[in-house]
Amino acid sequence: MLRQMKGLFKTTRILGFHSFANIVRFYRACLDEGMRESRELVEEGIESRLVYLGPMSKNFEGSSYLSPAGRALFEPFREELFP
Image 1 (cartoon, rainbow, N blue to C red):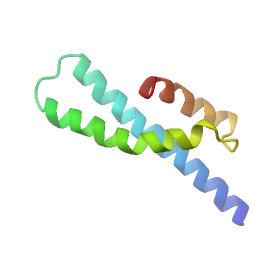
Image 2: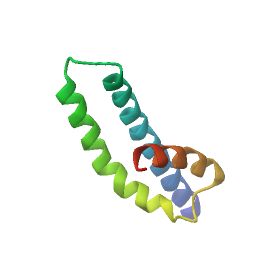
Image 3: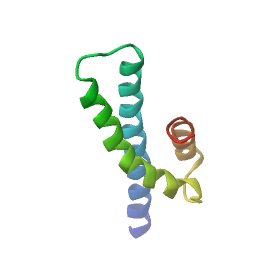
Image 4: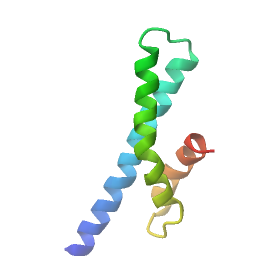
């Protein structure tokens, strides 16, 4: 049971990272397309999510517990968000 809970926690963390990274990607695409309305709010949204994504990314970088599927979710976003 404890092992299953640990696996669920790890899965939840990588899915959370993926979700927040998708939001940042969406916001950046809006800005790239010339969004003028609420620009400052969107930029703040990006920065506030990067504050959380940075430490999460560092945690996952050297992690041996990411499965191949987890690594496939993580690595493209890490390269895009933190080049």
